[in-house]
Image (cartoon, rainbow, N blue to C red; front, side, top):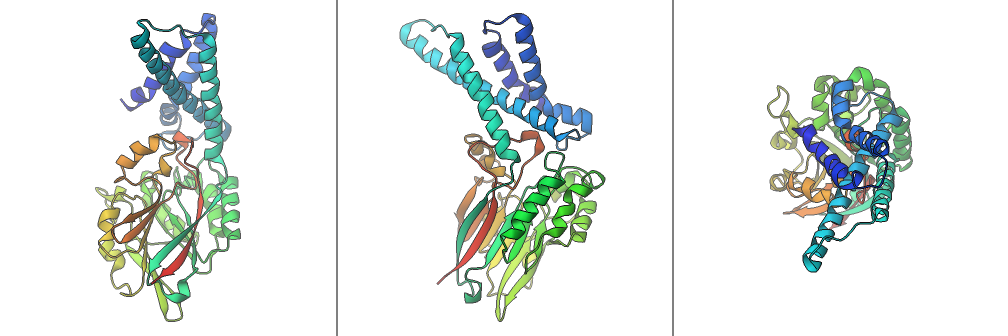
Length: 372
């Protein structure tokens, strides 16, 4: 059913865009076949690689398939919009207008051009985004404290070792006080991703590297990955916290496992356990991969929650649907009760939908500010 649903945009393109073109049949069949392959790239991932999440074929091919997938989706949207305009004109004028081939050529060029741009935006090294967060009664010595969030790296054949090395270099050049990774490090099992995650061992920050798992860790050998991340010098906060000190002043960095743990024989997220024995006066920064429990988290006295998972919705417009599955949170800075929530657009994204339009990737540097 899932793959059939993904094929519906292709069906719209076939019936309403390709068939009316004044082309010879072999040319129409070739275009239809190429776009059909792109529309079913997730199925190809499953057949060829055993997982819809981790295609194990060359990076250029993954990029091309994502381009074709994006072009098919955009073509379907543009064609539906064209048909809607035609319907309105038909109601006004009493007959459907003739659509010249040039109109279809224009929307075709627009769809293919936007798809190329969207894929390029998805696979680039993310730009730096600076965000100031004012925290009530933040200890004075932490005013100006800088924290870098990486999230949804999805290291894979699409985001391989050279990409990871470039991200790590850019992260280290920012010279923040602390680095956190809020889940979804990888797509693929350890034996296939070992080299791709190796650059993460070079992440450097004076107060350390802290992280939590995302839902994708649970798809590819959770125990292996948690142990391996720890071996890279990353402290995994599994329902626990760390205290960062500046003299007598302190802040707390806490972390919980992902909601995907429920129903599995592994630690479930437990915020109470993560905050147990935390200094009462210290502001709490919580790492939680998915943002949808933020309203409940706010009741626990957390000052700032950092999340990812949504990829920002990836495409403007589509983000509204993604928000509905995540408690209404999809991208950027929110105030939830007395807590602040930041939902990161992601350092990368899932290789099965590598398209960004209006929702750019980011390396997010938070500067904490004291608010009386």
